[in-house]
Image: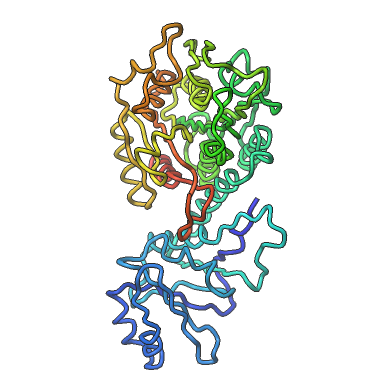
Length: 469
């Protein structure tokens, strides 16, 4: 996996550093007035206005790079420095306040995290594509920021991105389980995996979805933390590749299906951060890891399968497989009645139609949880949007031959009916939140390269850290 994080941040250094100064239109004039006349003249001559993303390289007295000005727009934020690691000459840099007032701790932490996320590269399949030591941009993290937090979150997001970006040929159910094992064992968690036909008795829907593949399905299950601590369970959809099954996807819709295990990647990244922080949680992670393939053993439209919860499910569409594997995992999570269940899944195109690709859809009946998540989302600039668990749509899932159908009767409200389907398998838990996510950047932006992406993870971590820190 990518190791560039360890190469882009240091806590301190005795080596010379190049200052990076974030400026807004409001602070540019005062800053320029305090500079030697040649510097102020140079900045004016370049046309630098401190617009967001704008850069101005300052020459030093010896002709070498003397400093960097970066435009922060209205105010410095997480993404102010994020474009710099890939744009500046290889040097050791430091963050310098534009005024005599130091940059506040939260902003310093956010900018440090943004720098780290901007340094991410997925170069596993590139020959000689990594930067040499002399070419690396390294930030000497500001002392007022929380470097351990920034580092913890950056490594969690790196893990999410790496897992999603890895092609399905190298990230099947077995490889995903081994990645989870690495996360679990590093933290001293108790790890268990149920494989193949062993799933038939306890997890029939997971088995049904994964049985057509030559790569055996799995239920990944690990537990960490003091037995008496509040129970929090994370469930992540781990469909390592989704062909659609017998309801086969078209080529365009299949192209990005390596990312269909994005929910699993998210809960592994979140779990890693939680365990490294030592939060006071009895954490459990459940990941149904399958490949939805086509073969003579594939499950069929019209099949009726009894779930772990005892509900019989009519298969209305084999391409609605994510909710099937999640429902068995959620039933197992609910059996312990934890304080909180969070599930994360790349579940429906309907959520993307409603909210676009950047906004994860949040479903929960817990208004206090929704309000807390919204608050943390705003505080850490990790957006999400709540959609309703609209009970009037539950009838869309009625089946004439089983307790429930895995798809709605019509084309409308697909993200809601999918969430309502999952809701049928969470009955004892006090609080449950379902995230329907894209997990992919369609285009590159500062700190957010095209490819796999963690969305909602920082908001979720902030919530858990506030409650159990």
